[in-house]
Amino acid sequence: MKNPLDSLGQTVLLGFVLTAIVVILIHAIS
Amino acid sequence: MHEIMTYAWWIFAFRWFHVLSGVMWIGLLWYFNFVQTPTMPKIPNELKPAVGKFILPEALFWFRWGAMSTIVTGLILAEMNGYLMNAIRLGIGDHNANLSAIGVGMWLGTIMWFNVWFIIWPNQKKNMGLVPVTDDEKKAAARKAGLTSRVNTLLSIPMLYCMLSASHGVF
Image (cartoon, rainbow over all chains, first blue to last red; front, side, top):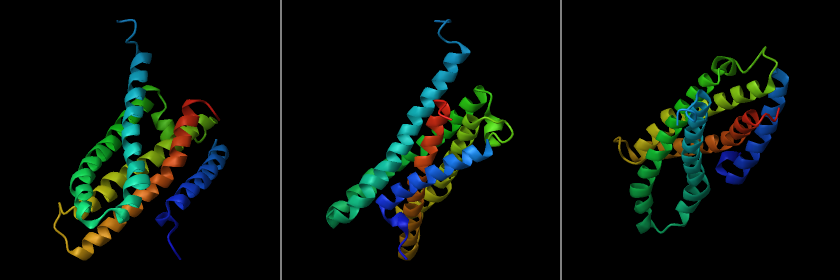
């Protein structure tokens, strides 16, 4: 399987997905 | 003048330097990922050394010291604002989502700073020939530095969400 980090587009997309996860996490811990 | 340079002004001054340093750091990170790395394969071989030998070392200098200045001014700023230790604990138990947000942002930024100084820079030194290595080691070092740089590009998106949302009270 190709590493998604080799694609700049997939890296940025993953960045937005990770942001959503982080926001949920912040709500959960506070 | 003494009325301007209050404690609140010094907090602002450190925030200003924190943002200036952060723009230097993340601006160059995005230059590497959005401009230099994708363009390298298109550059004719005889022109490649101009990037590798002249632009890359200079960009890496401002990149790593921008990262250092960002974390130092950021930690001072958090301490001056009185929330450094609580933010390090991710605001757990404080029932304050903005504090948790700045805490998560600080940890993401710290991971990125670590990646710059302890993974990207040592491997770029091998890649640029500042440390003598074999051709295979050089190739592996370039790959490791490049992938870690991509990880930092990925982390920069939630990191900036945390930093900005916390300081603008979005939560």
